[in-house]
Amino acid sequence: MFSHIPTNKKPIIHLVATMLLSSISLPVFTYGQADNLPATSAEARQEIEEKLATQPDDPLANYLYGFWQLAELAESDEFQAMMVSIGMPSSFHGLTVFDGEIPSSKDAEINKQFQPSELRAYVVDNLLPVLDALGTRFASLGKDQTIQLSDEYYDLENDIIIDYADSLVLQALVKAYTFLVRIQLAYNWELSVSSLIELDNNGLGSVESIRDIASNIGAVYDATLLVQAGENLKDAINYYQKASPLLRNTKRKVGLFVLEANDFEEEVEFSDQLYKVENTLDGTQAWGVSDPVTVNLQPFFEGNVDFSLLLPDSVGNQFVDATLTDPTFGSILPDMTDSELRNHARSADLLTENIWISSIPLQSIGWWDWHLATAIAGHWWQSHWLGIYFRQAPNSWHEYENRIFPNEWLYHIWMGWAYPVTGTPKSVWLWQQDPGQWIWTNSSFFPVFFNFSHGGWFYISETDGSYYIWDGTKWTEWQE
Image (cartoon, rainbow, N blue to C red; front, side, top):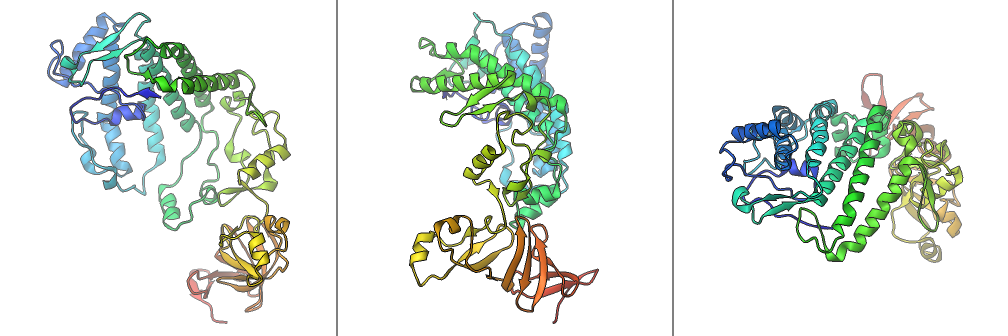
């Protein structure tokens, strides 16, 4: 929506800038070119600090110091040590914003022993204080003031002009980013990195598998951070609402953020959406046109929405229909009824009601086609967790949609012919024809199952269908 500002000519790290604004190239100033700044970084900072000590409201000094704080954050031992701890090459240590290259993320290898709590501590102790300070720095520019950064002094392709509209947008962006950071910190997202990597390597990554290894994921970690996040969002909206009419001024041609002529309509729509978001922070607001939904975000920022408790049980990347106990989600959807929420969730393909409805056809062919084609007597399906099986084709579109099969028998690709007696989205009882036995399994255990005929746990090989029995210490191949 905004034209990009010119970047510095020298090859330098833009990592710090992108931490704040991923979509906008902020100028990273090269010291040593200006007559009024010394040649070294340390001396430059000292001079800026002395300037602020005598003139704390000086806009240029505040802006330069703000960008300096971001640069210092990226150069700090804490940040670089954490990046290496996550998996970046050791050469990441000692980098400065004046280095031309940084190690590529392709050279990184995630450290399985990394503890997410380390990242949380770093963000709380280092990143948040800098972001909070930046808002004050960028607020130093008054309505009738302008900062001009000369291409001669700062080695830029063109002069950079920062005006009051830019100041407001920068403050809005800083507050918005701080809001997102605090939202992340306010909830529990801490997972075992090694477990996640193992799930990914085995192709088992899903909402269900993640919740299996971290049952409290999505729980409120710190409600105070949610309150602060709500205030950050209000501030972000307020700053942008002040900037909006200035950005729409067609006479304004220069600045960090210049609205393109063909994007005025988009900006108006964006401002209207912000107005609706603002209403949800202080009360209720209807969203949507044909089927509006009432939203109130106050309970969310008061810490009343605990996703670990409110979200239904998971099957793969879907949810079990029967466990939707609170359709209002802690009152953020105050008028939502259970049936309405189910309809919304079904239309988004988020719900499943039993193991068979949670299955998907493996052939790209609709009921009408294979019902008319007499040569096709059945269909291959794949459960989210039970694997691939064959069942006789349903007799109608209604039966197809609801996975109602005319013959209960199924042929499982590993277990052969089986008769399902009862099933939920996460478990099933089966009579296995060969070798003739009752078995039970669920989405967390399969391909491990309990064999009631032999009173023990079995494992079925997904490669050749052979069985292994657990003897209390290890799996051994089972011979009937």
